[in-house]
Length: 151
Image 1 (tube, rainbow, N blue to C red):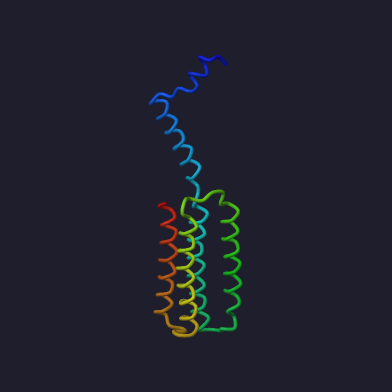
Image 2: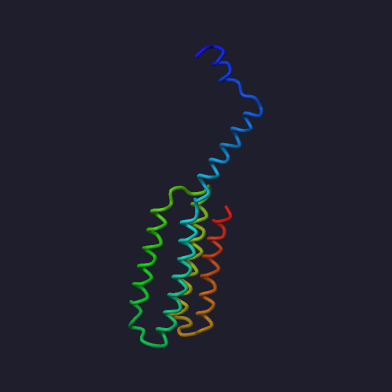
């Protein structure tokens, strides 16, 4: 390449710089546009599976509690599917995802523990508690998914 060509390659006018920055921003946003959706779907699925499990526990307290293994095995299977799909299809994550995920999982775990203990020990067979637990699990998981979608 000539010296003149090298000089032109090193030159960057303001418009060319803006064009390159716009293109870089577009490429970056396109690469991140799908990031987060596997995690969002996992959180929403977790909320659905958890809520349905609480419904099953309520119904079992009014019927045959020996069948508790059936919803437990079903939930474990769906949790494995949700986590597996999230792991397989998460190619990239948004900045700050780890902290948001830990927050969402901690909130879900605490809510889940209270829901299980409450529905099997403290307020066994109480419809009001079942409905409150379902609402709490739904709010926690939807809020986590919403937060991830907005990032």
